[in-house]
Length: 115
Image 1 (cartoon, rainbow, N blue to C red):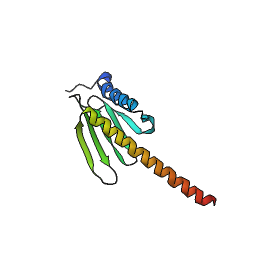
Image 2 (cartoon, rainbow, N blue to C red):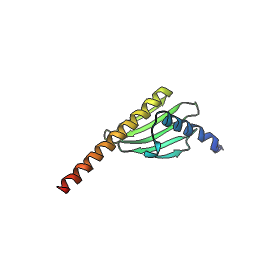
Image 3 (tube, one colour):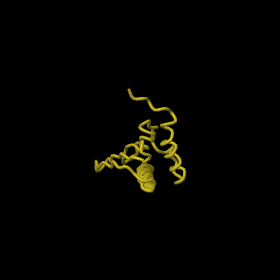
Image 4 (spheres, one colour):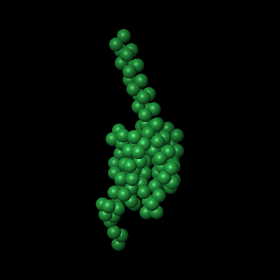
């Protein structure tokens, strides 16, 4: 019979990700995410162009399992810390680019209705 992980087991990976987001000055509250209790903890997320999960494995390395919407490509890798920083930075850049293009599209749509 396997033991259910304790809260402290799954806090470690989740809190590590929060620290990375804070260090990169990324507001995670703008992401659609949920705390993940897989292995040592992490997050599952849904962004406009991708969804997936990032969590800390029992081997103290983060795993990123990401599915991209348009291309249907899947990224499933165990990451070194530097790679994790770059993945999170790229995901945030993609989210911000989508947000900007959506904002421009809505602004132009309402602008033409006012004229």
